[in-house]
Length: 314
Image (tube, rainbow, N blue to C red; front, side):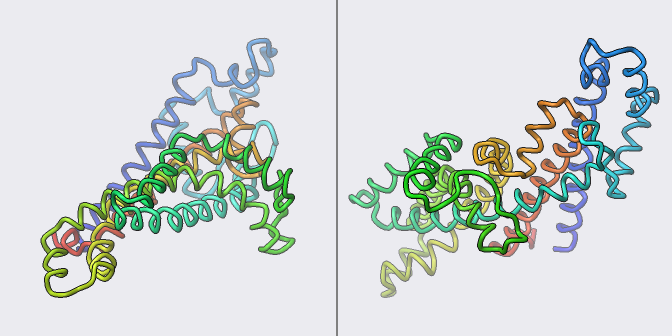
């Protein structure tokens, strides 16, 4: 198991390094002049020259990459050209919105999807199965930004239960902050829960047809106990796979949802930085988000080992 863990850790580091290299090449090497891209073609030559010197564009690309990676390892992410503050401060101020939003969304998605998928599999072919899968199909077809607008119209404008936009802030207490995140979390979670519930249903139906489940039933175990003791635990591996993949979709979805709900998170910062052509912030944010997805996939591999000891024994 130790050898497998070491190999996966090395693969994690190599993947993060490869992702950082791709981001650097796309944003720093492929553009003929990143400074002109940031300032526009009508910028004065002396202003362009000053920015090129500030970004280190007068140095070889490989050296700039090494300096950037070294800064990332030390926590020095550079200084935003637009805001004139360290990028680390911008990210630190915004991650307190995006990370709780993503975690709350994945918790809501899992809490909704697994019971729906299991119930649908247990009632296969019945009215409950048909109704639940029809709802799941509707959720798959529904864009999260459209769902967010619909939730605002119903629960914020119509009923007044939740704020339509903005973030209360953690300084006002966790309940007030979470209250601001409920609607955007549901807007992110419901489409992903629809996908996850269909995967859960398929996985549970497959395990229900296995010999060990039929043997358990033949020994007198009730259908409900056979479902929860044998079918559901053995169906969790593909479900965990989808949960890990959905985390990347949730991070990508925050770029849209945070703008719909005017949340001051990383997604809104990414949108603003792209609009303002602040390549320094965009570069660091893309690497941060890509690294988060890679780390989550690594965590999913570790969960595999816990769910199926045969994987660790290989």
